[in-house]
Image (cartoon, rainbow, N blue to C red; front, side, top):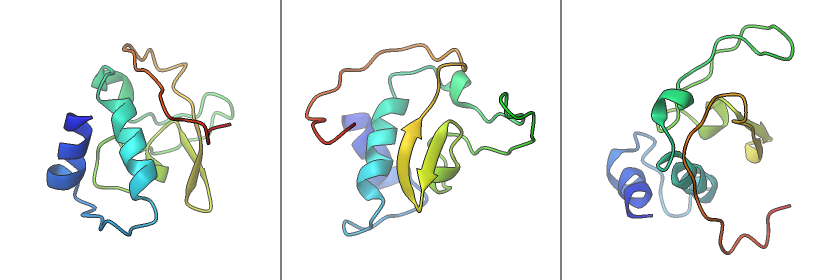
Length: 101
């Protein structure tokens, strides 16, 4: 958690305020990013389902987290994270996630 919090507070170019609507979801995605190999979180240019070109931002970048590849949003709210086909290596423990479905 310390790495994610440090990144949000000191390195994140979005410079979100405590009352920013997307601060919590950005922090949770940051928590997911740190245990994994960052090479798998680099941008992809082809959607494997449709064959369409997409430009996804790298995770932990200064862009909106809804543009991070593998992240799906609806009206600015993260609704899914799909990294299964990206050879992501790492582990994390979910706790206090009773609101997730």
